[in-house]
Length: 156
Image (cartoon, rainbow, N blue to C red):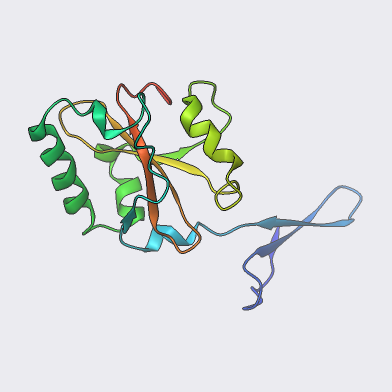
């Protein structure tokens, strides 16, 4: 395989590969998402405040709520790549098609502004298996949708 030089205008790298019949085939490899280089900025534009399954109403006490915001504050000093690489946060993308995703979150898929954005989760508490569910907006802001209280959306 031979790599071609990046065209600065093009965000994709073209990789040339030769098959047995020597025909050239181009495959495009997309770069890592741009949010990975950035520090977290949190927003709540799509937060499901009325959801019985996903809202902050599931936080059992004021103390746990404080722990949650302290965790958000502490991870704000790391880039998203550092958060993903650190096993403590269990941070990764989540497919919209997973059947365990609550209906309230699935309804967001109908919103034209966010329909093409990937869901993402990370561990927001050090005490329980609660996961923060959200997505990255087009300007790399992490939009917190809600909480996965028992880590039931993506158990693996």
